[in-house]
Image (tube, rainbow, N blue to C red):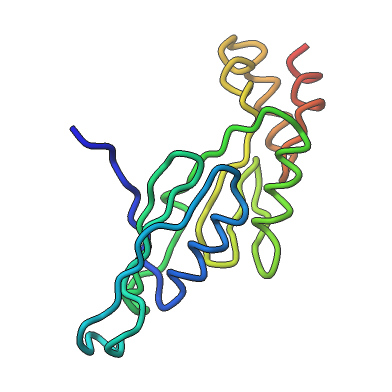
Length: 155
């Protein structure tokens, strides 16, 4: 079986979004760009139809499909981070230019895509029911997650 590729529907910002994501995440690259061969649903012939890109080993495809569908929090991308500096960097970049902090490590970027920027050790800290409850209580009071505070709550 081939790998599963997330497919993201944008109004008209597929290429800009792909370039933005590639600039945010290390070990990322742009892929193939395809163009509409004829006018379709308000998209003029010759405009970008789809963009493939790779974020740290994960393939994605972005489509300019018009305003019919919008992103919502029902789908998000989880990014496990090894350090607080990594969390801070990704948080700052993804919330810039109109992105929104949400809660519990969740944010929406300027395109409306939801991300969870979390410590890589989170699953380990929540495996124990007693520690996990304390960790979750601490997380509920945060927007951007703080590894030191989460580790302290687990003690």
